[in-house]
Amino acid sequence: QVALVASGGGLVQAGGSLRLSCVVSGRTFSTYVVGWFRQAPGKEREFVAAMNWGTLNTFYADSVKGRFTTLRFNAKNTVYLQMNSLIPEDTAVYYCAARSFGDIYRTLTSDYPYWGQGTQVTVSS
Image 1 (tube, rainbow, N blue to C red):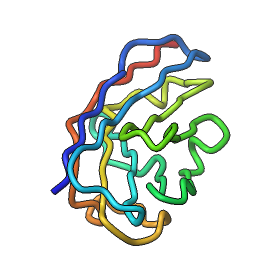
Image 2 (image 1 turned 45 degrees about the vertical axis):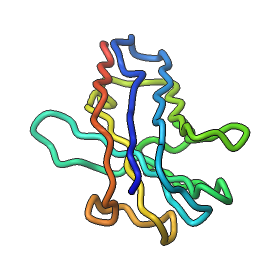
Image 3 (image 1 turned 180 degrees about the horizontal axis):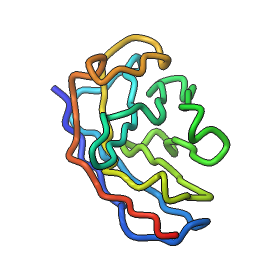
């Protein structure tokens, strides 16, 4: 079993930055994939980014490519989502999720069996 706890959300002006954290506990292996998703009011939950736990390879949704980076430092159990050049359309509840194997290109919520609670990100114009 894997448990995830997301934090770091808040209110920021357009053009600003935020860094979200996702602490992963439990059994993790190099094949694990940690993903980030977001859900805006009245919209479906959508894929944002994914990272392979062992190789650190990453994949991003087109809407955030070049602005968001997901990373992990020094083999720690925390995955970050660094969000730069934020725009109001980035406003959403952000979730981290994990699955135990598979590639980083799977973007469906059903591909991820483990979820953390969400953290609210609000970008003001």
